[in-house]
Image 1 (tube, rainbow, N blue to C red):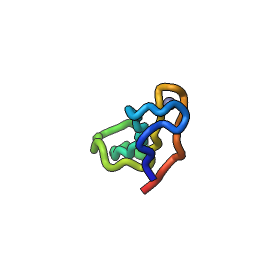
Image 2 (cartoon, protein in one colour):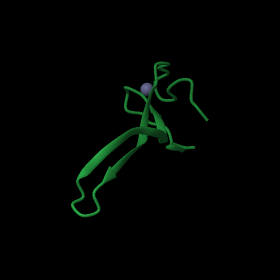
Image 3 (cartoon, protein in one colour):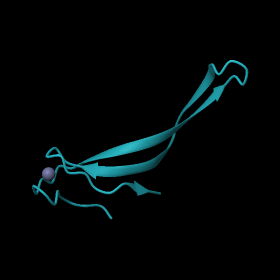
Length: 60
Ligand SMILES: [Zn+2]
C-alpha cells in the first residue's frame, strides 16, 4: 500500500527510501572485492516525509 500523502502533515511530496541489493565477486582467500556486478534489485523500501513521518517497511 502506497500512501499518496503524509498522514501527519498532508505533504504530497513524499520520498521513498530504497534498500537495494548489489552483486559482487570477492576472493574467498582475502575477502577482497574482485568484481562489482552493480545494482540487482530493490529489496525493501518505505515512504517518508520531511516532517519526520515514515511509513511501514515494504518488501517485494
Ligand atoms: Zn509529513
